[in-house]
Length: 519
Image (cartoon, rainbow, N blue to C red; front, side, top):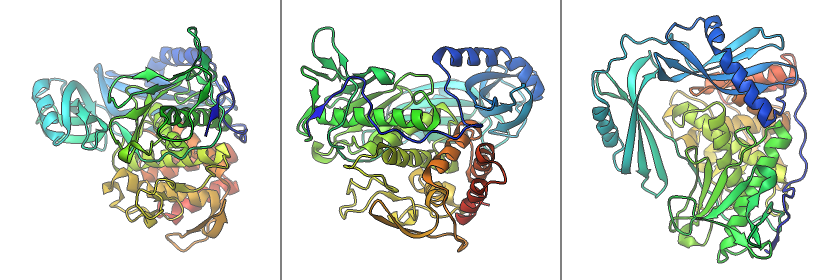
């Protein structure tokens, strides 16, 4: 494959537009900044309307405006100046400014007996380093917080332990320690990982920028200035920006270092275009700014990951450094972790972690369909080109997740104990059923046969409507602690907003959740 770059060119075919009415509208950078400033100015009165305590304050994180004038404002919360983890909420107001409803991560009243800790920050940090266990720890930072997730609010310390996980993936392990007793309350990994392979997409158009010194840099000026860097085996920093003399990049083989960069840049462009076309979203964070990509991470690193701290995507070169993990579905999946972080902030553990991972599968799959690339047609299989199992099977199946040997088809009380890549099966199955329905069928040459928990027949509403509903729920109703029961409520609200509570779409959402035993 020899890729002829096109400056700021289109990477994808045009997609369908979002439904009107309750669909989000695109805000320019200045309009979004003004909306955030205005919301923060009104935060005090909003806190009073919500009946928050005198020590509580709201900090605006995001504002989403719908075409019908409804405004969804996402807040973090503080108590006596301390961050409240799990205190996030979203207000939903009408065009006239009247408060319609509130989506809260916790219903508990935020209050602690005292903000004086029984143990020191140094003790909490030492405990967090110990809790990290086998991680190759290099540092830890600690701050005092109010912990309000899954329990009565308590004074705590949040320690972030950085280093490397056992496979070489960077680690940003968050450990929550009770500030009175020193007991570990919770922990989660902030680096969102996944696997893929070099699923090269044929000859594609890339956005590049002419360099002042001559030649071209792999900077996509038409999509927020996305940059692609060569780490050249390193595991930190940005490495070297890719540069080419004649604007012809890669040759389709991993031996050419530019090939991985081509796929990474193309995947970022398609993901950007999908968000723009489907949701009127201007970039991953909705602020018009691009993330960046790093390729050739480490030595024979068989993974890829998204990191919020650098707002970047990183790809390894795979086994033997011969299979760069720079495929289209990997890019769509991993960059969608950035979308989740910028919106609901679903914690990457337990049921919320499964929903986080499923969100990336859902949008990664949607990106693959959107690209309409004949070299990598859309399907409901995750990592189908990797052959990581050695027998040609994919990593995950959305129509029947349990076919991978570990994922859950249906919700149960034990789902939250699974690794998030397996607990995601419930939401993946829901999305497939909502999109395509139950039973046997063939789509783009792939055979599917999706069962239901209760033996019901589910009729799909189409993938476009399904991802519109999921996106609406993610950006306006889900919070950091949303579990499967709350996801059902949120997606039903989203379907009602978009299509009406008496619509076939609303009924299909309810049926699809029931079919995966979320009632």
